Length: 345
Image 1 (spheres, rainbow, N blue to C red):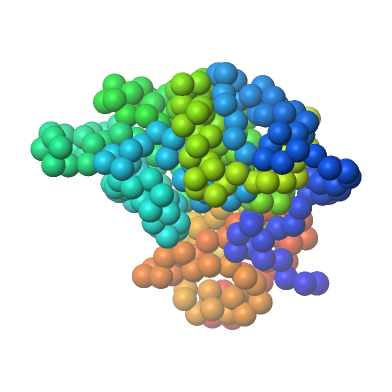
Image 2 (cartoon, rainbow, N blue to C red):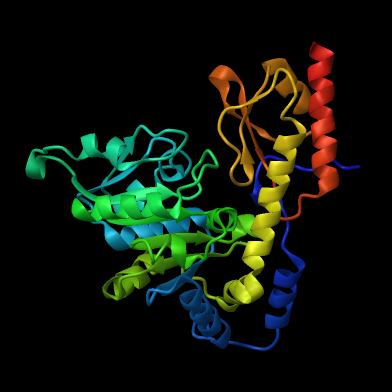
């Protein structure tokens, strides 16, 4: 069998229901730039799913969605606090700083997670206009280490941020995986706990280049529209993004796909839980696993399977399962890990 990639859920294809929706929308002409019936329906569905009178703006890139979201709530003299592992800090080529100006302020996090206690020292006395103004707290849900903020943890962080006059952004590239793992609604992790703006990912969970920015303060909606256009995320043929979200939200397809990806990660972790020489460096809560293995074993496995060495200094890899990862894929990969470790023993 052809080895399945465990490098990223970006490597997976498009879910058949989503692909069918794109094909169905591909007839006749429609008004450009979101002035079409598909976009109207998708925005209504997103508002219904997220609550809070959300304004929804469709985008086609994850980095772009983060730029739109953060450009909506920051000025060029502002600072954005984020975890030291945050995607906006480490994996987006300084896009936020380029488009939004301002400064990203990393805070040391524990397996990707921040807390009020960790944030407090970063919000001490400043020298006024001589420092970038702390303006936004950006959280990643789930984190870059696959860990989760509970509803209670998010509420506490939002309350803390608002008490310090910070707005809260959530980078939710895998937000569906978080909601599925916690068995809650999309609104329960966003509008209902005080999140101000959210980047909601779909590309990693069965869509084809489709993301959304949810703005929970109506007063910011106009800012977001201009930010999207300036940051090149206003698609001309918007209907082909919008129809994907229609399919994604219908009957909570997002939950079905994310729950399956999470379950495949949990299955892989269970199959390898008793294997000597392998250690998961943090709890497997969503669809990302971070095993520490002997470097030679990683190199052997990478001859057959595609995945990343996540932390070079102590040979920690990242494995990611997807909506289309099968039980056979997981069994095959787990068996290969066992063989590689046994050969080294």
